[in-house]
Image (cartoon, rainbow, N blue to C red):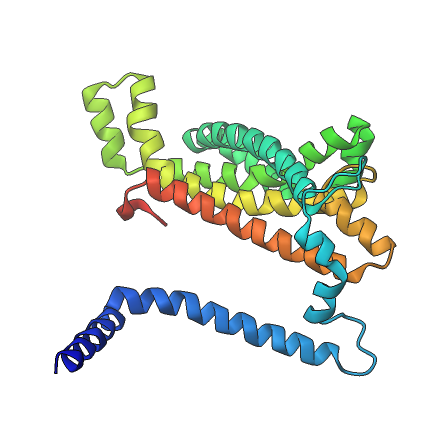
Length: 282
């Protein structure tokens, strides 16, 4: 009788645990993407097994690149390094170029947003330059700067600055007129108006620009490194693997690139959630 009661209590606690809405939602968040990923891998493996298929399946990719996967920290000198060092080098370039773009973009965005005449004069230039693809900047960057590293940083900067600048300018223009009226009534100094009204009101737009820009910066460095020979970076790693016919290594690198890009976006979302109140998040 006691044993039966214990079993009943155990089953009841397990059932109540699974019936908890938060637990079920969490399990759904984990299981649904996992099932979708398994289906994708199975389809990939199926199509790669057809006669004449040139794309290796996931099983073959793992078999041919297990050293890269298991030993990402090796360093044989020069550009012969593991994927950890390749990605780290690319991330360092992204951090520098993106930081410069954030500082310049927010500053110019505030100036453009506050002055309509400046906005009218510069808007056509901004709209033209922002549509230029990252790869198109590489030749001019190399021609002017003469070195791969500064050229790569410039490509990141010029690609990432536009969403930051434009979103900041829009955010400044969207400040409610009531806020400006209150600032005039209180005769707030320029510095107090900037830090207490302008920046807090425009911050959701600024974060939207920053979040878009981090993805573009990561895309830009991959594109830049592919055509810049002799530098350590995941982009050059892909190009080198292509020249040597190592398709499986390219696929593994693409997976790493996607994971890092996803992680960068999640970091920006986390920072945004820590700084902005929930009512202001876009």
